[in-house]
Length: 98
Image 1 (cartoon, rainbow, N blue to C red):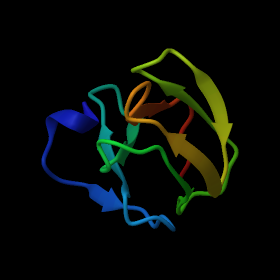
Image 2: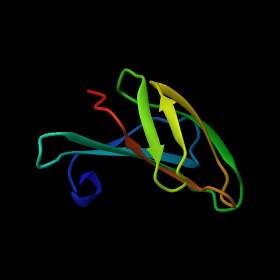
Image 3: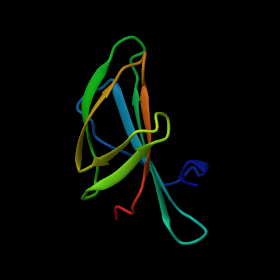
């Protein structure tokens, strides 16, 4: 549901201008909170690395919908995105971080 709405978009700091990070939040019909974190490499030719800073205290269980991988994220998260193998993360949060 979070990606189906135009509101509740939050951009997150990174230390690399070639990587964009944002999240969207929505409340589902059953009252749960749906969070999606997106991290994208804007450089189509080169791998890029960064630290993504989130406003939530962790730990957060996240699942990458593009690769099937799962990780535990915290307030500061190292990310390396290679445009030839994985130019983005589309992460669903497995528990409510708020």
